[in-house]
Length: 431
Image (tube, rainbow, N blue to C red):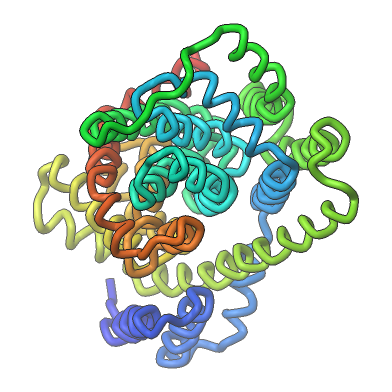
């Protein structure tokens, strides 16, 4: 296998330099790929071909629909209803509002599929509410940003669709099912951490649990939660594909937001569509340019070299799994979620499979790693949003988040070394 070391250096070093210079990630990926192709003397027509190939995928059509669904539901007055439902469930506990924050994120994440949307939408309501009730502002912000990562695991998550496309042959329905238990486990872990801190700081409890109140809030929130049920059951049951389910979910979300909850008028709908277009443009450009970057990696045999290098360090499956997680966590510190999925999947998935990790389990590991990366400086997008929404200095938020990092990494290790956590539901449905 001929290895062009200089071309690899041009590709990776130019990419890292542009990342450090705070280039937009799509430009960094695209320009580094062009420099690599120029060095090799490959016609730049390859760039256009690979960009078109990268976004010319039927399964990828689900991504714009799921993002649109999340925007509609997030702008349609859903947040307040899900907060009220979470409050009726867990508000009675010590540190009740922090528990409400975490559970509401689990509900809302299943609608938005975006940690950034979760933080911006729920955080703008819950952080001031928690501060007014006596919670520290940095603690309130830390709970909000860490719990937002539950939405990355709870379906329908457009990041799972992107991963399924990159991995090739991985069922989106299986990924959806695989995310439920890890998402719940993450929520429980964060609740334990929040409870311990709340006990030490003597944060207040909420009102006592009322079954009548819970059933009332459940009936109000039913229309929002039904969207998730329809999508997941439809995909897993084979009623329709992920793309078809996402298209149906957009129509359903539009009707619920406008006619049931009446949180949007038609003027608000068009404004929401404008926001969707902004988000979609970023995502699709990233996918297109990452396709060129992936082409360069493949032709230069970087995945094979990475596999050989990691296996050369150790042949112990435990250390290899830990090393994969470490690589993903480090990438999360300097890159956003979508490009990590697009670039790291073809490199690290074969290595994970070589030690017995299934593509579905690896997908959950990858997404949680990326979620933790969204909370870590210097490029933690959700960390920046949380700091802005909570009006707290980023350094103060990072310090308050440290205990929750431990909770998240503990869950990551459990997912890595106990496959049944991710695979129980997919295997149970497959039988």
